[in-house]
Structure formats: structure tokens, C-alpha cells
Image (tube, rainbow over all chains, first blue to last red):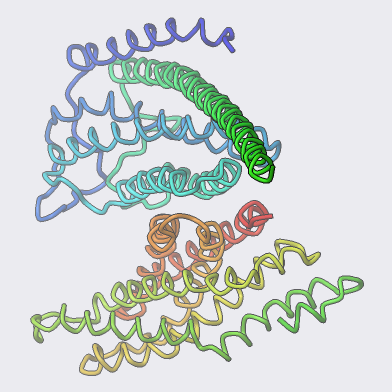
Length: 281
Length: 242
């Protein structure tokens, strides 16, 4: 069960944590304050003009974006294993797909929380139906729906199959959410991933540190969670076997009791027959 | 069921299989009118709720500006009801098992079911749309471009029928399937609804120079249809119990 990947887990976790920490420290100390989202023109959200003043809240960027990217990566892994499951029918792929979806959910929640804080500070609203927010919100609902579907089906084979199908269908929203800021130019979400990202080195370096750190943490959590879920499956199997053994023991006890009763009955009937023959005599 | 009996696997083309399955659904609906009646009545009830919801706004608010959204909310909720129903009589008396036992490609079953769902949805829309105009838009000045709403309505309904058929097949035998279908369907269909509402609203407003958005939204919705129906077509054999 244990592989090379397991030995790497603590290393990844520590390294990822350190990189992320470096990102945070760097972001708050060395990185310059910037204008919020770089806008082509000022945008009015819920009556507030989103200006281009210096924004401290932009610091969330150094965590928010890596976490969001990690959530997309985890969901892609889940989709990949869903496809593999449908091709091979190997239950191990279903387990990995399910685990990756769990990891996705954690990162999606983290993205949502950091994003909502940011929108509140930066745009003065808790929520706005902006394209990126909307599609990401839908992504969260899809991940939740995946787990609800999983809980609604008892038969493990069907559960694995249906969840794989839904995981693939749900993944269609991920590229939409990722690309939407490029497709709809009016979107107030800045495009971060591009060749001329326009980030000065003092911002780019911590951002990349955070990016790699968060991905390492993501991988480490994923590998750990896979092991936990594998153990859960083993425990489930052991439980079943124990129940079976319990049941077979009970059957044995019942059989024994039945045999005893039969013997008693035979003895009684023999005695009765004896009595009868005595009376006749 | 007569159709299934007469279907001889030998030499029966895919088209004939498709037609047989589709006709079975249509015939069943014509005889029972179960789905159409419940969907139409439900749509009427949603319209009634709209009436209450909008009863206090008076003349100050132009209903035309959000009629597209109202219309799509109506369509989505009504389709959810219909999609839930569409498989309920398949599970009764083992009809689905019968179809699956027949040597028919799963993709053809999907296409036939999606087509029959599409036909029912369009039928309900044809019934409900005039009522919607009568109740909420009879006093409004309609733009000359209003009839353009037919295009997003058609594209949207095709997508709803396609995705809905896949998801309602998966939820047939699950616990609390009515709720589960809604939980799965609404987020999956969201991009489609978003694009369709956008296109419909542009058509309702009919402002000069905004028709670029109309065509873009229709293109997005059509792209969604193509991707989702292709995915559903490919994945259907895993979604239907074998």
C-alpha cells in the first residue's frame, strides 16, 4: 500500500507550507501596494465606484489565486480518474476520483471565503453576480451535488459509475470559470495567467512561491486523503467479514440448539411410546 | 409496448429503432396525458405566483426588462417537473428493463428519450407562452424584435432536454430523486440558462445596437448544447443501468 509518494508527503507538506508562508510574509513586507483590480475603465458595483486607489486588501491575491488554481487542479485530477474509472471499471480510480473531489471541495471553500472577504474590502459588496464569481459559485454547487449524489445511491458499483459520469459533466464548468475573465472583457476580475502578466518581480516572485507551495500542499493532502479512504474501505470490508463470521457463529449455535431439541423430542416420544406399550400390557 | 414486441433485432436500422422508441413515448403520452397535464398545470401555478410576486409593483416597473428572466425561471421549474416524470412510467412494470434487454444501442435510447422530452417541453412552452404574454405583457409596449425570443427558447429547450435526460436517468432509482434531480440539474444547466436569459432579454428590450449580445449569447448557448449533448451521448451507456 505504501509507495514512494507516501514518503514524499511530509516533505511536500513542510516544503509547501514553508513556501506559502514565505509568500505571505513577502506579500506583507516587500511587495508594493497596488491598485485593486486593474480596470480599463471604472466600474460601478452596487452603487459604489470601484476606484483605482491603493488597496491593502489586494494582499489576499497572494493566497486567493493559488488556492483557486489548486482547486481547479484537484478537480481536473478527479475528472481524469472518473474517465479512467469508466474505461477500466477499476474501483481504485473511483476512490481517487472521489478523494480528489473532496480535496477540491476544501480548496473551493477556501477560495470562496478569501474571495468574499476580498470583494467586501475591494468592491464594497459581499457578493456580486460577476461572471467569474457566478461560474465559481456554480462550481461549488456542482461539487456539493457530487457528494449528495454519492450519498443517495447505495449500490457501490452504480454509485461509482454515476458519480464518474457526473464528475465529468461537472468538470465542464471548470474551464468555463477559468476562461470567463478572458472571454467576457467587461469582467472586473483581472486576468492573471498570461505571458505578459504585468506583475513586477516583487509581486510575481511571492505569487509564484505561493502558487507552488499551495500545489504541493494540495498534492500532499490528496495523497494522505487517498490513504485514509483506502483504509476506510479496508475497515468496511473487515466489518463485513466480522459480521459474516458473527452470523455464521449464530447459525452454528442455532443449529446446535435445534439438534438438542430434536434429540429431546425423540427421547420424549420414545418414552411416550414406552408408556403406551406398558399401558397396553 | 406493442412496438417493442414487433421490433425484430435483425435488420432493424438505428433509425427504425429510434423511431420505435420515440413513437412509444409519444403514444404513451397521448393516451395518458400525464406529463403534459402536470407540466401545464404547474406552469400555470408558477404564473399565478408571479402574479402575486408582481402584484404590488404597479406601473412603475417595466416588466419587459426582466420578462426574459421570469420566462426562463418558469421554463426551468416546469422542465424539472417534466423530467422527473419522464422516467417514472418507464420504471413501472419493468418497461426500462425491457428496452435495455432489446439489442438497441444506448445512445439511441438517449436520443429517443431526449427527443420525446424536447417535444413535450416545446408543447408546454407553446401552451404557456401566450399565457405569459397575456398575464404580464398585455399592457406593455412590445419591441418589434420580440419574436426573436423563439431562437434562445429553442436552443435552451434543446439543451435542457439533452442534459435533463442524462441526469434524470441517473436519478431514477436514488433516494429522494425529485430533489436530487434539481440539485444536479440546476448547476449543470446554469451556463445555458444564463446565456438564454441574456439573449431573451435583449430580444424583449429591442434596443438598437445591442443585438451583438443576442447573437453572442445564442452562440454560447448553442456551444453549450453541442458540448453537453455530445457528453451525454457518450456517457449515457454508463448512466443507464445494465
